[in-house]
Image 1: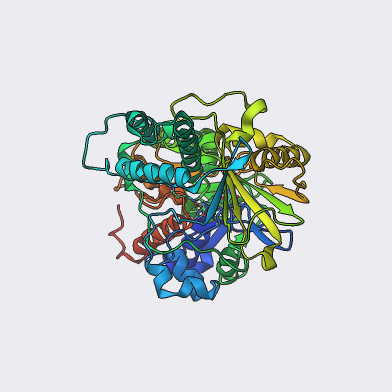
Image 2: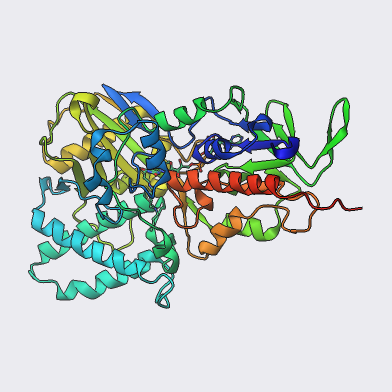
Length: 500
Ligand code: 6YU
């Protein structure tokens, strides 16, 4: 029963909902969420004929080892394709190959051969970058530097010889690098640490989506909780811990934590599970916790990476792509991973866009493309109006397809995760200067002294606290389960002899 202990969880994303789901003795749990909906970075919205995902889109590695896959299956939220045994066993290492077309800024499609040669090389180099985990001394600090040096070493030995083909291969590799920025949620792969890169674990299974929207998962989790557990529009301003707080008119009980909200409400608790995104912690941890977090914890928050990846959704009256094409890749022919990218955001932000996934099937979605853009260029895109984004996308597509009359999209919708005050970015990565140990440090409860008479006042969950599945929905869910289990074990442990 938890001995009447009061638990507050902050944030109703998959980590917070997962914690609520697993905590035994629900009666005393309150889940406080700043937004007007649950789900956090799982966020489905209507667009065109159907639904689109502003945040998480796929179950990465849908197989029995993936708790999001198991839960979604349990709730009956997945389509028949995802349930197939072969689908669950496919080993694709996180990069599902989509039938695609690559347009370049010369205004034409590139030969599939040039494109696939470059992609194959990139995949090989990426696999060797992952192999530094725990085995070899990394030759350079970042994944970006490693990839660039390996590419530079190979350029002179490339077959074909013609300078044009060389330049085009480099240009395709530049797009591969930008795609990797989207996957890692970072401005540049030069910021991503090389040695721990291979510690991230990809599960087997061909990535799948939710036919009724990813939000159907948090919605099901929410409805399974006792009514009144989750309070929406309840932004937490300060968490006071190591205190001695009493409820008005009840002198008998003394709580170590008081959670104070923006609207003036406050909640006393024995334990608080903090699931706010790392981006929010980076910006606010100094004031959010009173007293402030110990330096070793603050250091992990500063050192781990948290970047930006956004979507740009475009709806077209008619498709300009072929029915079998599922990915439209964009390549700027004068770019190369060996040269510094432009820092003039206003003039060239759109060159960071990697291309568009075609949402399938069109009968369900309409003719919708989903573009991905990471980093500072993505932050800049957030400051533009919808009309500016739409006209720039039209210009880009006209240039790259070589069709100056390509009709403009009918409508646009983009995510703005960097501006979102309770998120401040997309997801975490292990930055240069940090390691998987920082993830474990972030996950460590406080106070740290195991002899403290009031243990586990602050517990930490959220995608950034999962050492091998960070940046994913399954990492977030598992982290919530982990912290609930930590409290369950504490509640169920035989009581220690009271101290005199
Ligand atoms: C996945 C995918 N995916 C795209 C984009 C994004 C993410 N992810 P939450 O933020 O959900 O909850 C915290 C809550 O706290 C929130 O509701 C806040 O409002 C609230 N809060 C904050 N402050 C508060 C306060 N003061 N008071 C009260 N409440 C407060 N994951 O599995 N598949 O396809 C994608 C994608 C654009 C933004 C994704 C994907 C990441 C997940 O969305 C994310 O991890 C979880 O939803 C987070 O849940 P949570 O509960 O922790 O926080 C080698 C190597 C490579 C490593 N990377 C490889 C994997 C790549 C990741 N995939 C990305 C791809 C896409 C498209």
